[in-house]
Length: 432
Image (cartoon, rainbow, N blue to C red; front, side):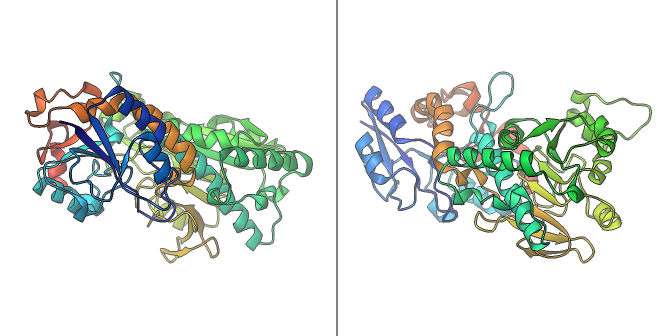
């Protein structure tokens, strides 16, 4: 008897064209596992066509009800779930996200299993399946585009005015070639002196931050440390961009003078720390937020601070790649979409306005940035997931959780089993 697993088509919006498993990997799995069948929902927008999946050996079919496991990328609509099925996707539930609690409840009612890519980690606790680099790549492009558009409205000519939105490039190679040209313009003509020193700060140093830096570093960049900010103000070039990567010790400090910063202590006891980040906003032109955040941690930027200091700080735009609503950036009031990636937050009126026009600070807040580079991001994601797929499909979900034969790295990512929260995630009951 064959084992069937499915791939759900993505339909979050017209820009979501990614896939969790690419056709060439489907072909390899089917060649090596004669008892497995793959059913793929048809899609008119997916970056890999129905025909490519069919040629790989998959069955193109709307109905996935025969599948014991279903892979997807983004959240799944409530009416899609079937009882006793295992679903593998980014559920965005581990922080108790309010907007997805009804989805989680439905899965619990139907006795579903939920495996979340975000929590698949190796023995050292590092994520092994992720789109983070591509969130950083697209986030930096869209942020610099937003900055250029903002400057156009102010009749300020900058090299960034030529940048396009990520979705308006054909692929990542085209992006990089264009940025090389923009870099040459900066070297030749410089950045308007009123905007200098032009400093881009990145909060965080993980996969997301590295992706953002990969784009920024195509331009003429000099990396500096936070302690060098005063020196750069007095001695800088308008033909360079200055980059700062902020680590935890740069962003927070102990509340008590009796304590010193210790990284593990901060992770274990974030309530003992306060933010010291806002002092940098007098220097930074663009801030890229690339950190993991939940409500236990201090915010990077608060509404109160920008209201009191609005006419003093240099900050023009925030690329909020992490996109926690009212989170590390307290005035990230909403997420945006790829064809209109930014809004303006007015700290005086505490209001937002779509686009880049208006009084306030621009926020780039697209919540599914990797979809803007669907081909490259899908290939890299599928590469990272490939060795786990058959283990997920062949697990015995009829047995209890301890004996279902899932490898440890996947077991850590099981949020629900037979509709119940697993021990590592039982805290989510407080949000239900």
